[in-house]
Image 1 (cartoon, rainbow, N blue to C red):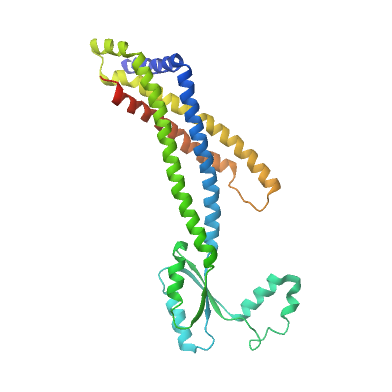
Image 2: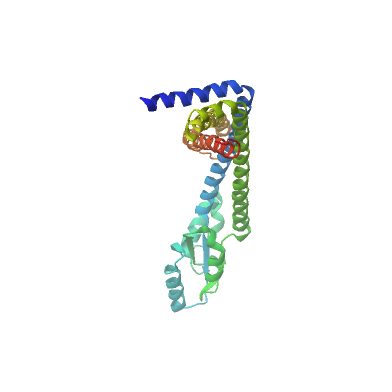
Length: 298
């Protein structure tokens, strides 16, 4: 019973303080909301770019063209080395005949241009291996190593495209982390400033509570719950706004830009909510804690 009364007191004091501060509370909620809105929007972009990059990575492969002048023993040794390579997930042999059949399919109605080249003696294509890696980011050094294998006449993995892709994703990842860190610090500072003002206004009340024997945590809890309220309210607004905005953007892109495949709003909206709401609560409590440690001398 005592615990329930204490909880009712804590929540009541926190709510009264939020209302009493008025514009400062609204400003804190607004700044947290704007901060998490920007963060959530960046996360949506990051999720979709990450999915696109993952799809591209799944398509990355090394093509090893076999030296036609090499004998069966060298070819066998090349095959053994590729099959046992620890970085390779899949090794697929592609004969020149299969390569010709693929080329015909790609040419479609113009496949007649290849008539007369089907026989092995006239086929200008080469036997090859198509290799998929366990870790696509290792493609550069793995390709360089394989290029030195006996029987490998040429190794191709689209270096001019793959390297800029990995450089770009690495830069985006670090910028994203720095950006999110800066936004989080801003939100904590603003909530701490609001709580600090509350502590200053109620300093006489806090002193009286100390004189009559109130414990430190009994005094602290209303302020912590106030920060929690501010953080949660500041998180709910961007969660609702992002969900609605992304649904509309998804519909428009689906209708007008067919080649861009976005993650479904239902899945992404849930992920954003699962991250932003706890983050808002944590930022609110952290802001209160920082303010209390520095300015509430109890």
